Image (cartoon, rainbow, N blue to C red):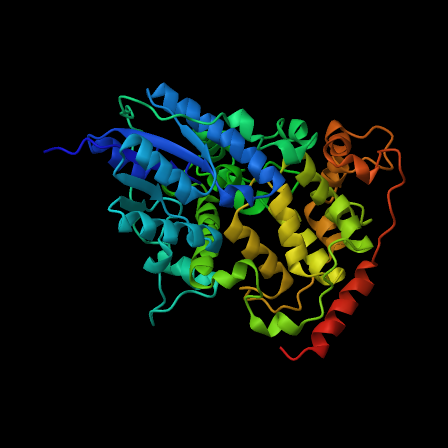
Length: 473
């Protein structure tokens, strides 16, 4: 007898219909499919900008499902309790989802799978958030990769399955369970007035994401290797926002990059390297989950970082008022757009952890609150890489000079002027938007004087190097 009991399709960071293994198999099963999104303990633990952007993606997914004759059922509460309630209400005998690899998600998912299986439910997880499952990539001795370059060389020639087609329809049940209203969740509440500013800069949903990828492959990938370092240029793909919420699968990106290589586009291989850099973050988070909240290199546990997230120096850094144009421009770009150029991320992280000698977790937490492309694994690896406590093959005593970096990568100060209003008679709208996005209690205005450096660049570097010399790493 053919099984006609429903399958609960639990969406999380895979908010798309195209190239979705769990959804494709569910639709091909001949059984009713009930798509579900849960505003659970993991979602509630995310930062303000991430929750706001997630809400937009959930709304887009709901519309895509409606176009296929389906619905997205919304529930709020502990994930297991919500799933158990839906099983009781619908008679579902299966719950399927796509795997996540960060420690917080695994701590939620593994007990849920065990609990559901114990009651006879077909609890099944599928691949899809990464190109290569973390346990499927190993060194010649069977271990995991601690350095990026050997991992890249190991996987660059691996086969990556072709993306799956979007289901023609998503078969639903005869009777739908009740659903919450997305508006009632107020996922944008913590953003306050900043949500209206960010709304001008987001690219939401799988259709828009695939369009963004297509435009990048057509117009940007050829110069990607060099252009991506210059923050004033549109030299990056911008896809981190869409990959974060799974509006676009990494397989689609990989195959687009491979086709660009075949077409002779010079920057295509470097684009693939960046996709594998994202893989490396998930690889490390799976094998060394402590990377997300503790020093990846334990030798750094005794390092005398400052830990006060409300100190005057940290406040100046958060506000983009350090007096260092590259640092301040990058921080302000984040408040207006919800993202930050990759070169800027390295500079502001190095400045906080080395020139200001502040713990990387202060920056990690602030980025988690402010980025719409926040990713738990990439964010953690990036901060530890910059601080010296993480998987960087370059010696920890490298200290970026934010002044010379600006002269090298923004020689005409186009990027700095784009985001810094103080001291300019006619600042651009981008620079003024910063003052619309930030909290009112900061009491900042564009007619204020631009601050002098809170720490001299040379003195800050020397202070960091002295601290490193005093430690026995």
